[in-house]
Length: 220
Image (cartoon, rainbow, N blue to C red; front, side, top):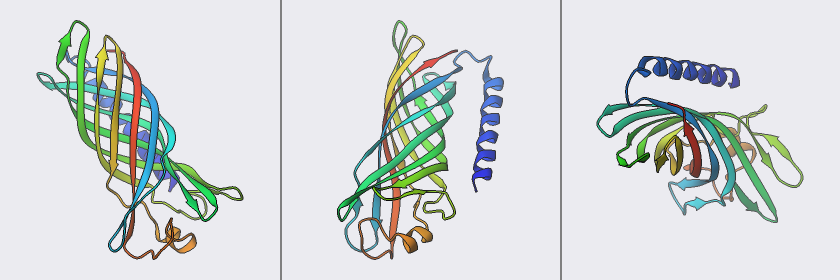
């Protein structure tokens, strides 16, 4: 439930604080804040029949990062983000918008070589886990909570992330892509609403996809 998600998120913050304290003395330690825009959608996979790819929906992401050098030019980076995902889809004559909010924790190995004075490349890859904390299903006549009396989507999500960017002095500019591997459909969603786009619910799976661009500042 939502209380468990909040508790797990607070626990993650404590872990990040512990990591920060443990590596603060290291030369390549850094921490900072990030923010940016999302362009997310979902992909519906099918055991039989065609896969469906829904319209993208804009959103945003804000959070913090902590990283430390492992070996030369290679760092381990984690963080905690609030990120808004979702999709759009036209059902008959009405467009339906799905908005799902997550607390997301990525863990990436980052290649960060110096390119010159106050300029550093950043290329990262690794897994992420996320916990749904809210959202809406909206059309012209209805506005339904994603995690209300009925859970229409699973709260847990996980997948792989890639990112790239430049550190210019203390500032960061970059982009990335999150590839969800968890089926976020619930049986309740299939029973009450049916599979988005119509058709049988048998063998259907729904996965998050998100392209993002962002900026940030490193304070260490």
